[in-house]
Image (cartoon, rainbow over the protein chains, first blue to last red):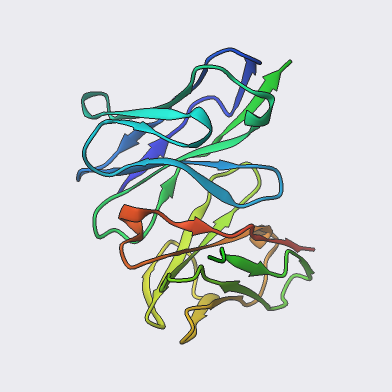
Length: 113
Length: 114
C-alpha cells in the first residue's frame, strides 16, 4: 500500500517569504506524486505532478517540487508567498496501473500580511 | 472543454436515509473516481468506474455503491446513512491512465447527516 505523510496541519508564512510544505511518501514501487490545492468550498486543483523524467517539477502559480528518491520526499516550495496562496495543500501518491490516489492529511497555509 | 460538474452542492439528510450524488465527467474523460473528504482530513478513495463497471474499491462498506452511464457520468449512492457519512464527496474524472496524466476534480457535494 502507498501512503503520504504531511506534518504540521497549519503553516503560517509571511507575505513575501518562502513557502515550504513537506511531503514524505511510502511506496514499494516507483511512485507518481502530486500536489493539489483546495480553496475554501472548492474541489481540488492540480498544482504539479511527478511521473517520470526530471525530478524538479514546476507547476502553476510559481510552485515547484523536487522528487528525492533517497529521502522518499516530494516537498513543495514557492520562493515568495502571496496572499492568494492561502489555501489547503494536499500531497498524493499513486503508481503505474494504480487506480487511486492516496492523500496526506493536508497543510492549511495562512499568509500573514 | 467543460470541467467536472457535481450536483447537488449541498445536501442535508437524516440518519438512516438514502442519498444519490451525481457527477458529469470532463469532456474526453472515460473514468470516474469518487472520494470522501471528512472535515480536516485528506480525501479517501471510495471507488472508480471505467466502462460502466467498478474498477477498484477502497475501504468502504457495501452500502456505498455507484453507477457509470454510457456518457461516462456517474452516481454515488449511499444507503442507511450514518452520522459519520457527513463529508465532502469529490468526483474526479480522467482518461484510462489518470495516474499518469492526472485527475480533474469537481467542486464536491457537501453532505450533512443529522
